[in-house]
Amino acid sequence: MSSGRASVKFFPTSKTTRVLWAGALAFSIGLVLLPWGIKLDGQTHADWEQFLGRFHPLVVHLPIGLLVLVPLLELAGRRRPALREAAGFVLALAFAGCAIAFTLGFLLAYGSGGAGVTLSRHMAGGIALTIGALLCLLARWSWASGASVQAYSGLLSCTLLALVWTAHMGGSLTHGSNYLTQYMPAGLKRWAGVSEPTPATASFYTKHIHPILDANCVGCHGEGQAKGGLRVDSYDTLMKGGQDGPVIVAGKADQSMLLTRVTLPTDHKQFMPAEGKPPLRPEQIAWIKAWIEQGASPTVAELQGVSRGDERAEAPLQPVGDYSSLMAEIRQMELGQGAKLKQVSAKPEDGLVLFTVDVAPSFGDAQLAQFEKFAPYIVDAELGRTQVTDASFDTLKRFTHLHALHLEGTRVTGNGLGKLAGLSELNYLNLSGTQVGPETSAGLKSLKSLRHVYLYNTPAAGNGQQAAAAPRSAT
Image (cartoon, rainbow, N blue to C red; front, side, top):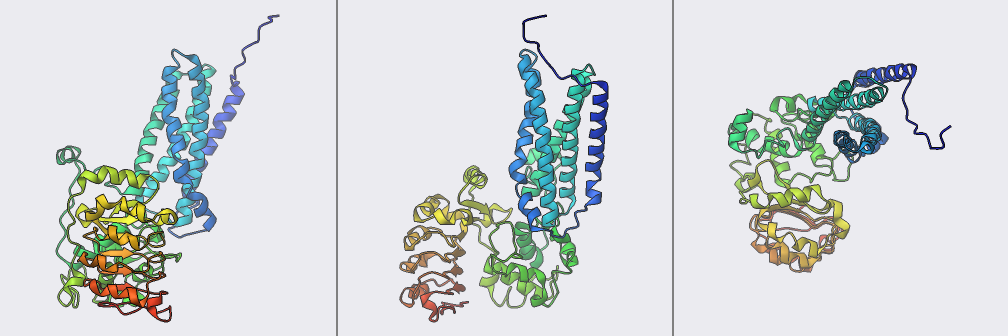
């Protein structure tokens, strides 16, 4: 009897192997049939499903990293057997990660009312990826008991291809189907067969309404994902409506669900745009309202009282210049924590939005000053409920293309408002819930371009509930 410690390894018996493969087959069939058993009907469901589902983006990166690590360990294990043994453990973790990520992803899609072609493809990829990881795990165990190595290698290769496809579909859901091709060089686009968009006709819908919907709504209501069964990526699908009925009632803006949703309070459960996106600018809401009231036509070039009667209110954003040299920094900012700059639309010349909702409690005058290098390109500053004070006006006066400024719920008192007099394009200012009083609100008179001023719950409003007078209109 040897005094040395015996090496013990797990080699499944034939019966065990058959049971494992039968279980894997049953699990795979159940996973494939799941979308037919529980259909993504475009309707929102339980809040707990959405709560758990929102952990999907956090969890999904774990199995991706583990699956990429497996072939590296297998190759390195040719010289270091310990690494090859570790590959089996990593593969088991990858399968567990795939199963958890798929479960959370399905809860997110079902709970939030997700639907659409790209979402369905992303889910199919998740199913294929989870099944592939399981089959790789079992094939590797069978290989340990003497079965073919080629079967494991082939399954692992197919699983990695499924990983690439699924990740691409997930990226398309988050960033749009043209995320990888939008800034592709023209020569590479021709080689890859990527078509350029056809120029739109000069109707009010194509010039103003469709760009608003494309920039703010298509991510949740487009071909890739159609929450509530609603798509707004074309005129026909917009007018068709969703599972709750039409969202546009031509000639009746007050009965049009689309206009109702975008004008709800931002903390309302049904407020749109959702997912933490900034609200539409006042002029965008005015365009939508006027377009609906005057027939919601896809071909009319001008609207009464908008195209001719009020040229300033209708005029599109002026180009703000080329900030391509800063795009790498802006992209990095979007992926990190803190205040973010986001493009108004797919067209860079439409400018940037400064978005601070995630860091409002810690965002003050010093943090705002750090965005001075981007000042000429920012058209909307979302500073509501941040810690900025009147000192912020020294920085904001350099935002020369600013159209909308949100300062609601801040510590602003209005001293120094006159410093913004040089902002010739500023037409929206929200000072609700601040300490702006009658004596300091006089500075508003120097802001000649203002069309919408909000002073709810301020000393300047008199009784604290109404808006005070403004240069052109107040609410």
